[in-house]
Image (cartoon, helix red, strand yellow):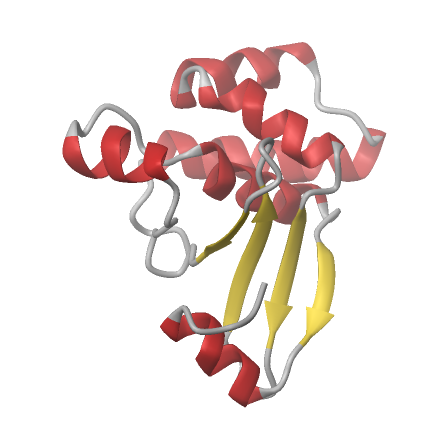
Amino acid sequence: MRSFLPAVAEQLFQDIQKTYHETSQIPDDLLIALRFVFGPCALQALDLVDRSSVTCMSSPSGRKAFQVMGGSGHLYTCFISCHYCPCPAFAYTVLRRNEGLLCKHILAAYLCQAMGVTQQESVSDQHMSMLLSGTAPP
C-alpha cells in the first residue's frame, strides 16, 4: 500500500499501529522516530490528527481520497495511493526541492490510518470523480 515510502517509514507506521491499538497512545520513542524520519512536518501532522482534521472519502468502486482540513482552514484533497497533495508545501518541499518524503497533510492521513482514527465518509462514484478531477464543491 505504501510502497513508495522507505522501509523505515513503513515499519514506523506498523509500530504506531500496533502500539496505539494496545495503549491508545504513541510512546515517546515512536514520536522521536516520527520526527527523525519526517522532519518538522511530523508535529504539524500530529496536530491535524489531534484536531480530527482527516476524513477518508470512499466510493462504491473502492476509490479513496483523504480530505484534510489544514491549519489555515483550507481543505486539501490528498491521494496517498499516488502520493499527492495539492498544498504549496508538497509542491515546493517534496516535488521541487526533494527535501521531504511528504507534507503534513499526507502524513496526517497515514497517521490517522495507522491509529484507526480516520473519520469515514461514503460518497458516490460521481462525487469521487469530481474529487479526482478537482471539480468537487468544497
